[in-house]
Amino acid sequence: MEVTVKVNYKNENLQRLRQAANLSQSQMAKAAGVNQRIYQYYEQGVKDVSKAQLSTLLKICNTLGCRLSEIVTDPETVDLLKSYEK
Image (tube, rainbow, N blue to C red; front, side):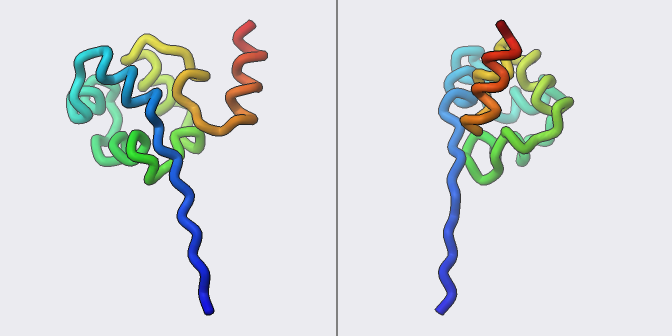
């Protein structure tokens, strides 16, 4: 018997920040210079944004005017970033 586990990293903060900036997913991806499908995957949780390249994360943060700690989902990374940002 094979068991498959799907981990979901839905990123509600990323979605909230994008909506607060009055951007659609396609507008956001274009403004950040990020592939639209990949951006959608980050928001939907298909891909974990915490595993993205640093340059991609910074493009997203610069476009949204937010801190990296506001969009990553990995608890250890969030803690490290909060300590770093002090």
